[in-house]
Image: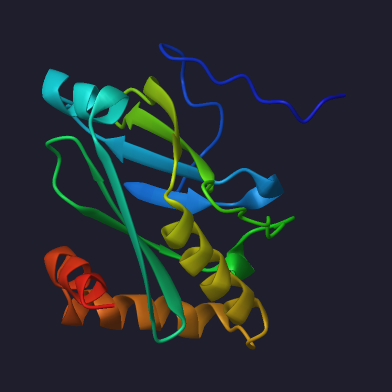
Length: 168
């Protein structure tokens, strides 16, 4: 038996992913899953080949990926390594970065529209992994984490989170 899951453009997403956008590092494979309804050709093209920008910020025990693909708006995704299984923290040599698999899914049909592998810049990758290592050393309470995420969303827009990273 293999744990390999077949993932192909034009096929249904073979597993359930929570929310519109989620990030996981389970099994050592950084993956960003974007599930949006009624995708436009422009959105599909933006994810498929648009310029990718990544930022990362840590707030109150919650790590946020901020992602902009092509002409799409900035998106944010909260992340806690405590919610993943089998995380490995890779070394990031100079000139390299985390390779993130991006999966774009038509939410209403669950059909995969885009598979794209993007390498995140070195400094952003290192910043993210440093935050992950720190969080792994902290105690974790699932309910408290959920409340922290809600509080951050009530206090900050995605644009505000992006601006906050610009000053780091």
